[in-house]
Image (cartoon, rainbow, N blue to C red; front, side, top):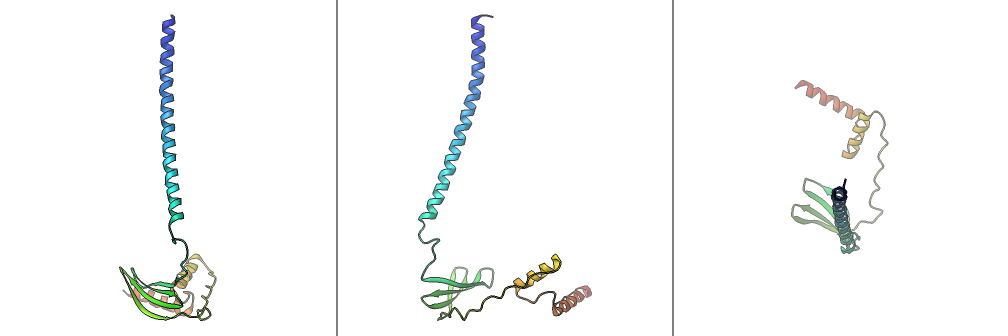
Length: 158
């Protein structure tokens, strides 16, 4: 083997290693670029949250007292402004004043009753939870059981 042959083998082995090193450098640059882009996006999101005026701060002049949905897009909202309550009908692209009245005292608003603890099997607890959310009597009460039986009888007659 001559010196020229060994030089050619060395050049071939360096070229193969050079391609691998170049590929790794390309992957590294790509990864670094993606990390930089993600960092810029996160920085922009943080700045947007910090610089948006009044977005997260509660307003001292307008306070939403209550909000109840009465349809898919319709709701009744009670808003307190300077000691007055405004009952608003909100639907679609329209807001309508339903009633204007003086704000109620804090003692006039009833405390929400804590729901009774759920007991029984999963199915019974699920029915109780649904009944509490809908605002009906518990499904384990005798009157609701008789209603359930009557409903089942009507369905079996069909």
